[in-house]
Image 1 (tube, each protein chain N blue to C red):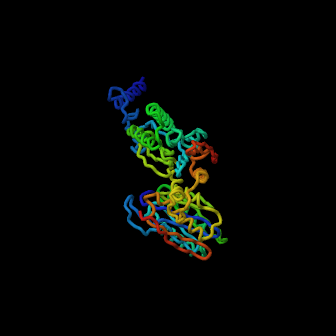
Image 2: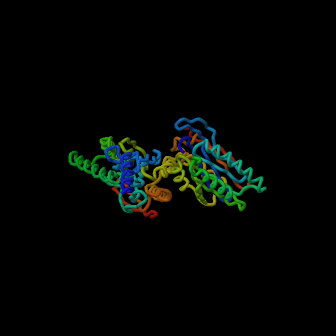
Image 3: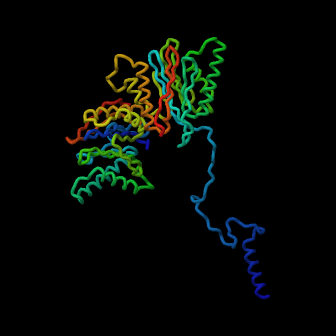
Length: 201
Length: 263
């Protein structure tokens, strides 16, 4: 889990959502890449973010794309966040005895514009939250700092400031995370992407 | 008659086949002279070395924050072992001198002994020099005490806080074998990872442009510490019950207890 490093936060606001991740790709103590966000867009309203072994992250992303492509062909509609969560959870459990070494976060806006965020462990055990979810090598630091700074009913601008703050402060104490950050803010107007300037160490 | 001798003959044959080694049973043979069924090595229970560990982590979080003319040392009061709570009201803080306190998390046994040892050493200093040892001196003494046990360490993560001889707040942070550093704030224990980034933001004003022109007063810092422990108690299972807070100023030491969630 700690081979590549990385961290991800997803936070819920008032009819909006934000997902943030660091950009480091490491090989234990060596930093190989500085432009590896761990978030992937599903559609206009949904993101999947993963931390853990980068190889498994890439594979899982391709598996999800394949399954979603099948879903949209069979069902002729875009997938809802809760359905994706269930699908992913079942898929991860199918590898109960040789799991994908990833911790997934699913973040999406429902039809009623309420954010849905949830985190899954390696075997697909889901944990929903109305506030925030975190994952990564510095997850304890992120829990601590998000617990202090999150408040209900944040608008997109304030949500962006809060999630950026939390990501930077949490990952600064962790040598395996950092080297830049990226935030996606999802609201009814669409997806806005912003890069963060962080300590490059 | 006839059957009896045949039976006897059969028994003798079997006996001869299996009992080649002077009548004792051989492990690779079963009692009927056939080779015994073997299990693969992976299914046979291998001998495993069991070892008693002298260390236990009893959990808890300790924090110290220094201001210009005050120092606040706080620690939760929960004593845990595994997933059980042994006590809700065990103090992790010891008052060493009128101007210095130490808070230790980690192994409760080592913490109690260490505090006792430090108090003894300070009493000796007081008798020999006629005055109390100043906080930076206590900081150095603790480091040498911890390093003295380099090869069977005190499993404690200490934080020393107090006023130095100029009356300025000082905090010293240690690892288990005595590496120490003077800082403005320090946190140790199970809630360390949760609290440290928040202190980076609030006390060192990292990643923010909003450094205020006036420093926080003692009362404001106290409120901040109560908030910090409440947040840590939410996410860390080993932190909770009560917070013991010692506030050291030039007028002496004040003690406060603040309740936390009991879950």
